[in-house]
Length: 166
Length: 203
Image 1 (cartoon, each protein chain N blue to C red):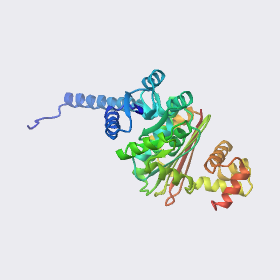
Image 2: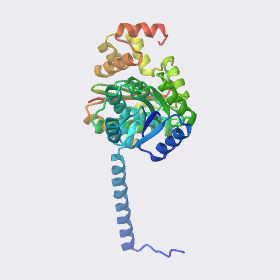
Image 3: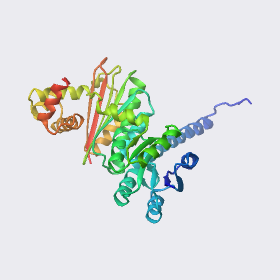
Image 4: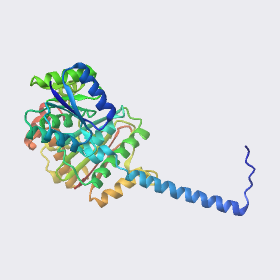
């Protein structure tokens, strides 16, 4: 089957509209899929969910300290997705041979740390525009009254700690 | 004949456990429960000697069920059968009253061995869990660069505000990191923290 198609002005406009709509749908889908909370997170909590997540990847080690209490699902899922984002960033960009994920929980505090022994970067030079995931994390952290600490140097690995009170 | 209740929301798992048990003739599977509620309802009304308990159930956690059963029915033995192989969960399940813990990727023979062992009143851990628990107790603690930095400053005697200034971080952040270190190194207070840091040459 061959498509014999020439761009007239009106076709171009409707094509462009279609692309816009597609873009909107994808954004909506992304939003919806992020609101799906994995069962293990919903029923067993942040520790189990992170453990499961890290287990499925060979380079990632997981450590848990503190108390296994549950928090509001929006806080637990924020923590989970943030950790996921940080791990994925490390896997994609750092070339690390080892990624450590740590969760420390107290009665009213969640602290997440992701460390990799990869290539590191200069935190001052981070292109915030490109790193959509990190942007998201930081802006949502503000709404939770939380803090983020990024420690990294080219050639010396990366450590990102984020935490908030619950 | 030993009466066994299987609690698992995956029919495939539950039925294969049933086959293993019935073939071994070590006991009789009197029921399969797919939810926490079904499990609790069953033990409340029927006699059960042993419960094979999964942890992730659709309406609750096996950890809580374990605790309820162990507290209320002291003669029932509980054997956890689950895919969670994480230290704190295993620890919690055993603390909640389980006599044994088996991972779902164990060999069928381990299920039978587990049942036999806990019926004798002993604890049973499948091979992988046994190794994990042993490894955990003598695992070298890993500290992140930031934590190592902080620990050194704490051992040098700096206060939280001083450390915060040195590292260009907020005092709250330093406070949290310090608390994290206390958990990680299992220290009650800063003095113990410093002692462990020096003993284990962490700084």
